Length: 279
Figure 1 (cartoon, rainbow, N blue to C red):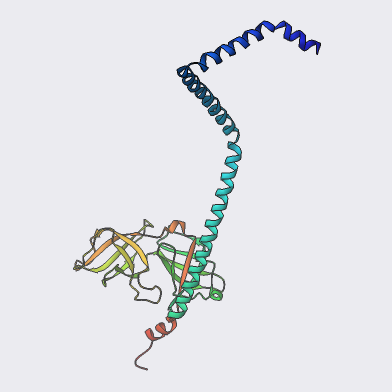
Figure 2 (tube, helix red, strand yellow):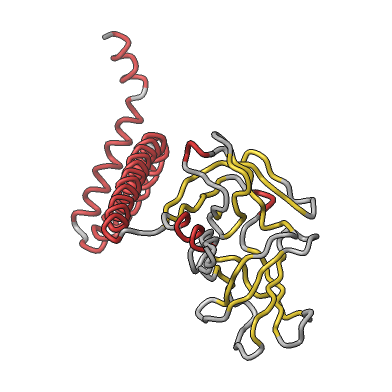
């Protein structure tokens, strides 16, 4: 208490001065409306600046908690998207299976992984991890997500060897998409991304970039599976037909997952093809 009194007595002049200044300002402002407005405007400006600065400071310290909240919300949204995608995929698969069952579709697919592949030889093959026990048989067509990649050549119980499209001995029946015009596609070695279509009728109308697809004239592939796109026209062995250089759609250097096509009528069609009419 003694120290407080000593402090007040010591600085009494400053207290008196401050008191008179405050009283003077109050008298000055209270008797003049213009000065009141100036004071209030200035006070509001100062107060607004102080509060704005304080809000920025406190907001900065709350950024971490805000960011954590946003991250949590984002994670929840991503989980919802993934769940919705999964549900949509399951629904689409269910509808597809139902439609296939009702329509009695001719073709089915067996997914397989490529465990050995080559693109450097004139006659290339690759191996898949599915065999006879999975329903794989010789002569079945093989595709990846982009298009035709080969035909099953040998089937064991657990694995199968596939003749790659990159094999000079193989020819595939193809056609220009959207037309009935049939040709023969083959690979002539070298670039694994380029094939050639021959024996196309000269009267066809085509454009660079048009798609070449399977013709459906075999039990290996259904009609309409993409093979490649036309790059340009080339000089063929027979001037009566067009020949095309084709950019193959599958990336044969990166084959990983493929699908083997199962044709439920294959055995019947093959048996008719080998039927001896003279017997």
